[in-house]
Image 1 (cartoon, one colour):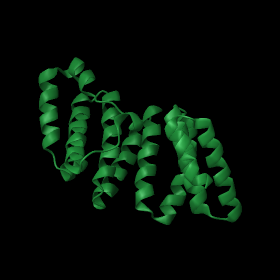
Image 2: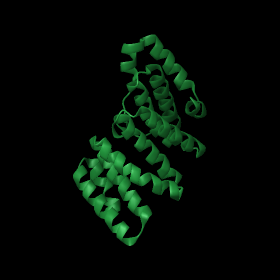
Image 3: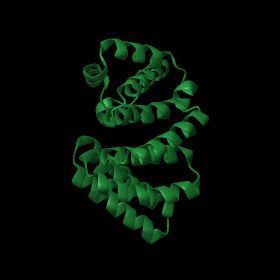
Length: 197
């Protein structure tokens, strides 16, 4: 019950309550010797810090979660863990590590034909590339992400994912024509081409 309750206040903005519930759940699961359920509660703790901007704390919890999920071989949670870890790394300026984790998440999601998870990784990766100064790449990835969302009928809201459309910043740097061209090329890429790119 605690494990299932913890995400609710996280989504409504009461992050301290979410953390208390998740920590209680984790501790009980550990007492019971259930490493997997304890790891899922740890993931909730990590996400609560990520949403609040506590990136170092989030990363510390993700680093506890990832070995357990890799050992279990659960692809869904591995993709989510990689994407979330990469977001924390991005916000800490660790772009190369973040790119590596986003890349692994994208490959796994594509192999599973999980296009929703492809978009969950593409949006933040687009923002990372914009932050790193590669505005053309940021726009292409964002456009490809939006095209996949249209194809599958939606996706996670940008505000929940903590991502934003990179086109305005790109326009200031590379100009409207370059942004239009990058958008058209990104929109035309298939999911397979996007992940390769």
